[in-house]
Structures are given as C-alpha cells and as structure tokens.
Length: 267
Length: 233
Image 1 (cartoon, rainbow over the protein chains, first blue to last red):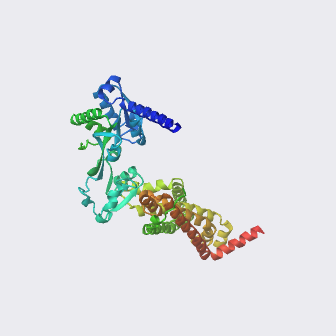
Image 2 (cartoon, rainbow over the protein chains, first blue to last red):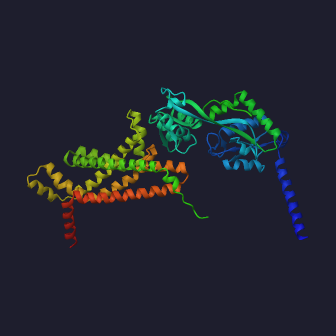
Image 3 (cartoon, each protein chain N blue to C red):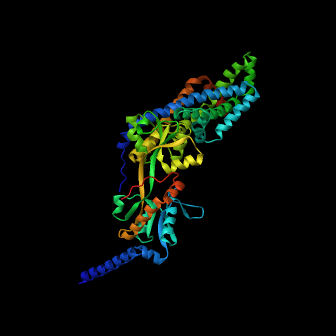
C-alpha cells in the first residue's frame, strides 16, 4: 500500500512538473501571443565583441543587439533585451526566460536536438590577410612563405595541416592583436584569422596596405527558438530573408564586422 | 579520483623539446658572450674616454634597466621594421637579450671597478704602466673577479628570461611548451617537464660559471680570499 501511495504521489508530482514545464513552454509561442503581450523578450550574446558586448552604461551592443532592434521594429512591439553569456543561452531559452535568441549560435545537429534554428543571420568568416603587393589568391600561393597565426585558435590547424605540404614557416603569436601586428610590421607575409578581428585591426590602425586575400572558412549563426515554436521560426525566417533583401542586415554587418554580409546559406 | 599523470604525449614530442632547449641554450649563450663583451667595452669606454661617452653609457644602462624586457623585445621586433630594419624573431630575441644583459652587466662591472682602491691605480702608474695597462690589469681583471658571482646570477636570470621571447613567436623552450600544451592538452605535465629542464639548465649554468670563474681568475680570487681572511681576523 505504502509503496503504491508513494508511486501515486510521485506520479502526481511528475504530472504537475510536466504541466508547469508545458506552461512555460507554451508562453509566447506564436507571434500573436507576443504582440498581445506588448513586448518581446530576446536573448542576446554578450562578451564576444563585435557580435555582442556591453557598453559603459551596461546596455548590450553589437551585431546581435542591432539585429534584435530590427526584429522589434518589424514585430512592432518594444524589445526587452536579455544579456546572456555563451553557456547561458540555450538554458535561458528552454527555461522560458526569453522568447527566442539572437545570440550568435551555430546551428549544429547536436544543439538542434534541444532547440530549433532559423536560417543563418550572421557568419564568422576566417580568411588569409596580407599586404596588397603580396600576390596570394589560393593556398598554393602561400608556398615557402612565413605566416602568422594566433596560437591555440581554431584557424591554426589550417596552417599546421599544410605546414609540410606547402613548406610554411609558421609563427605562433599569443593573440589576434599581436598576430595582426606581425603582419603590419612585415614580420610575417600573411596571417590567417577571423574577419571581424582583422577588419577591426585594419580600421583601428588606418592601414591601407593590408587586405583580405581569400576566405577559407565560414561558420554561420542562427536565431534560436524553442523546439515547438514553428510559427515563430517561420516568421523569423521571413524577417531574415526580408532584411537580407532590403540591405538592413548588410548595414549591420558593415557596421560591426567591417565587411559586407557574406552569402549566407539557407536550410 | 586520483590524478592521473600522462607523460607519454609529452615525450612523444621530445624532438620539439630538444629543438627548444637548443634554441634556449643558443640564445642564452650568445647573449652572455655578446653581453659581457659589450659591458666590458662600455665600462672601458666610460673609464678611459671622456665625460660625454660616460653619460651616453649611463643613458643606455638606465634605459635598459628601467624598461620591461618584453617592451624592449617588442620594440626590436615590431618597432624596427617601421624604420626599415627587419630582424627575424630569433635575431631580434638575441639582440634584445644582449642589450638587456649588457646594461645589467655594465652596471655590475662598474660596481666592481669602483671597488678598486685608488692606491692600486697609483701603484700601477708608479710602475710605469700606461693608462690602458692599468685599466686592464689593475682595474678590470680584479673587478671582474670580484663581481663574477653577481654576473653569474645575472646570466642565469637571462637564461630564465629568454622564455619571454616566445611572445614574438620564437620557438625556444617556453614557446615549444606552449605548442605542446596545446597539442596534448596536458598542461601540468608539460610544465612539469619544462620546469625540470629549466632547473637543470640553470643549475648547470651556475656550476659552469663558478668553475669558469675559478679557472679565469685563479690568482685574483685567491688574493681576494686572503683579503677577506685578513679583514675577518
């Protein structure tokens, strides 16, 4: 009897918990719900400039914040921006703290088991940068050259994998800034790095001799909704398509990444 | 859960470690020889040439002794190319270490020179030695003998400071360690190995310098020991 009672209570607790979970998941699943509520809660990334950081007043700024403002503009409701660090993004969405994320998340199959992604709205690109008068168009043109890279970065492997084949002399620097400095001062002939950091360094220095030679990698990022929010996802996809077409997303890219919006894939 | 050390991935990269050790040794040995020569020349210039040369030497010594080594390294590696002089990482590192060590050694040797009593100079001159001979035999060699322990510890410090050269992508021992750490994700093991190597290098250098000091300054040091005994008595 006793055991049965326990099971019953446990079952009730489980049902209650599931109900609460369902209730929280049910919040603002549709565009109508959000519009009726009169505001939208959007989670944005902080701590990863230029995509997301915080200004002196504590407001979120960056690529994500500007795209969020566009979302609010087309939704026609005020936006409540919720600042999230990378590991807090998906938990905050699942817990119902935000309606959706504009938080520079890569749509990986692993994550897609837990949440649902829109088509990409931004992308990290990695490229080869060098002086304008250095003739580089492909990897082959790097043969026998001295190249620089941020030690421990994901792009270092691109050089390491080609070290023997292309007879590269790889100099590994402590960070992106020192790597760019080595290129500016001519200590290396080319560097591999992320476009946002390279563009920022070129702009900050007023450098006119250094340019992008080619991109070799791209990591697109998507907006993220809860798993059952099909309607919301469809609306966001529609919005991303729209601001890609009318140039508003390109303006955000120019402002924060320092280059035009790349050809973003869709799915 | 007990901590599991795994040194195999580190030893698998022993070729890299050996290259790193050789570069650390090469840089240190080069900087010690060149820095010592530079310091002796500067002390001689300060003692024998005019007041203006002395002021220039002082300016150099103060500049190098009152700025961080990392900044000096960056100036040579990133700064010199702006005026058209491009030194590759290893050469820039050797030059920075030489200039840095040269300044400290100049100051140490100057202290030794100051410790030579005036009466000894007069004794030398009264023996019809030239000014240069007095400097060489009466001033410099005894001064060097006296400050050799201080110079030795400065040399060991330079050996350890060579690790900073990894910041300009010179693959000496520390730079190598950073690469191995990143390849193996065995930070603790990597730095245990590197610590032991640095310790062994520094102790070996210290012993070698001691031995060298006794070999080069046998007479002077025994005289100094007699002096010390006489003072103690």
